[in-house]
Image 1 (cartoon, rainbow, N blue to C red):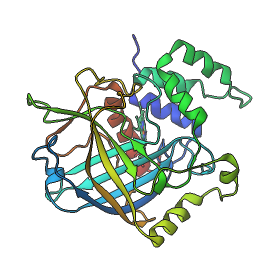
Image 2 (image 1 turned 180 degrees about the vertical axis):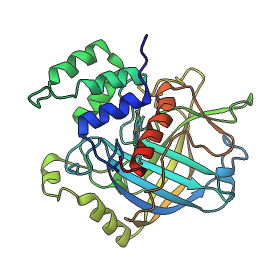
Image 3 (image 1 turned 90 degrees about the vertical axis):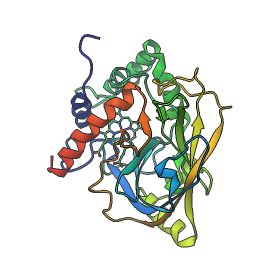
Image 4 (image 1 turned 30 degrees about the vertical axis):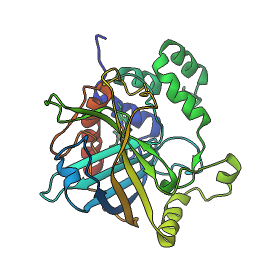
Length: 304
Ligand code: HEM
């Protein structure tokens, strides 16, 4: 492409799709903050990882509804997100930011951008679904995600949602013995979605109360899992899932202790912030995210 898409183009497009929302995240605008702990488990695939070597570490998590609307209706089916910052004893951080779909909408930023452009309404405020269908025919790497969007229910609770990192990461990348993995966060309370009727019986902002009730009733926890990749599994394409027979290992348990509050306000959940020994892949979508999040973070903190 002669004119590759830039991070700022995404920010402008998000503002076009959701309106200017001064001081608000340009994507995943509606959210719920939570705090808790991460209890690591040592693992042969991650020898000596500082993240997994100590005891309990503090966690700040932000759950969110996809899109730039801070008043998004939580009864609607579709994308939900999760950002998790784990702070290590010496102060370094490891951030995991994932969504509830197992496959991304496009093999690279350009393809994803083109898809988002098909969602821009015309002068009468109407969206043209035909544009999206045509785009998918010409850009098949968006199809698996669109199929997921079609069939997705409404997340019953953030405590009952699975989140996927989607990109490939490495541990000890420079070593001959490097581990290649993708992570996901499995809710120990099980995955639950609501049918359309069940969702309509809820309040539009039910997710914060639901989380509070679940925290009052007992433990809300997640298993942080890594899928270990084989050489033939893609390093760079988040629109392609790895075969489902790959080895799964548990990196630790995330336990929530509180929800609500402003702990997430000063956090930029940039998925390229990794603790010692970990490194990102060359996935161009992953690379694009740091710059886009930084622009959104700066705008949000400066009231734009
Ligand atoms: C080119 C691709 C992408 C772009 C341009 C993009 C852009 C953004 C932006 C601008 C924000 C707001 C950041 C802030 O203000 O702090 C955001 C938040 C978020 N994104 Fe992305 N994103 C992309 C891909 C992804 C992918 C692949 C995932 C999931 C694996 C994801 C999950 C999230 C989540 C969960 C949040 C909310 C973080 C929070 O609560 O602060 N995004 N994204």
